[in-house]
Amino acid sequence: MISADKVDGKLFLEESKRLVDGLLDKYLPPESADPVRIHEAMRYSVLAGGKRVRPIIADASYRYCCGNESQKEETIYKAMTAIELVHTYSLIHDDLPCMDDDNLRRGILTCHKKFGEAVAVLAGDALHDVAFSLMAQTNSPIAVVELAQAIGTSGMIGGQIADIESEGKVLTEDEIISIHNRKTGALIRCSVRIGAILAGATELELKKLTEFGEKIGLAFQIVDDLLDIQGDQELLGKETGSDSKKQKATYPGVTGKKEAREIANKLINEAISLLDNKEDNMLNFLAEYIGQREN
Image 1 (tube, rainbow, N blue to C red):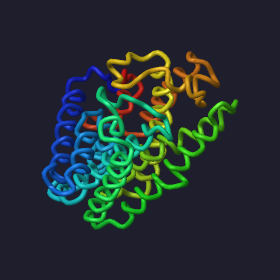
Image 2 (tube, rainbow, N blue to C red; image 1 turned 120 degrees about the vertical axis):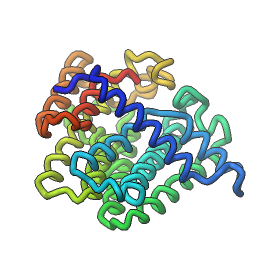
Image 3 (cartoon, rainbow, N blue to C red; image 1 turned 90 degrees about the vertical axis):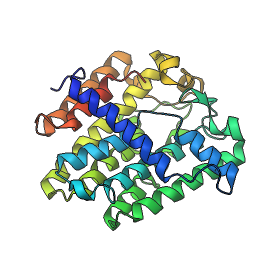
């Protein structure tokens, strides 16, 4: 197993985050462009920070499958930006009073608290639009469909509605897994697959990477559930304890905290065992990072 203390892994994470931040700044409309208010809100939410895990995973998958370095600007870089824009749009809408009604995101006021609900809704919609414009520019219809399906009613949106409908109800572990796999796991799985697709992965590589993505996606949300209970609010950049206040269905709520942690660790180890443990395999490092994260 690759240690999360491994220097080249940390450097990869830092350098990749800087790369993603630069790409986001490059492809987002400038604040000065009309309509100014929407562009301010878009840039406010997107450039507020964040781990950038999903686009970094896509890049690591592209590298793992030996994607063409000379084509990165026109393929994976645009896809990485699109994935993060979609993720941020989902957060803006999640935070709205009609959804989770949160006040903080990434350590600052949520978009609707800063700009008002109407602007927040439209800013999220606009990020969705920019994301698919960028994905279309990769000239990979398969990758475009991959992203659309991951965030549609069989993916993220389906998970979100199931999450809302489960509030205050007692769910089984299988029902929680189904929600988590769609609400959070689908976009992470999609990030892994898009990187592989754009790199021209073999059928066997794509099969292994799909399973890898499913496992780390579920582990990510289980860890998220645990952090909402016992995480540091300052490190998280958002309020803790919100799941219990809203009577949301969570993994530790079904299994208990100890077992939830054990299951997350098991998923991470299973994911790592699927891929070659070569020195430059940053996917395995990212899997371990997801299992150990504190925000």
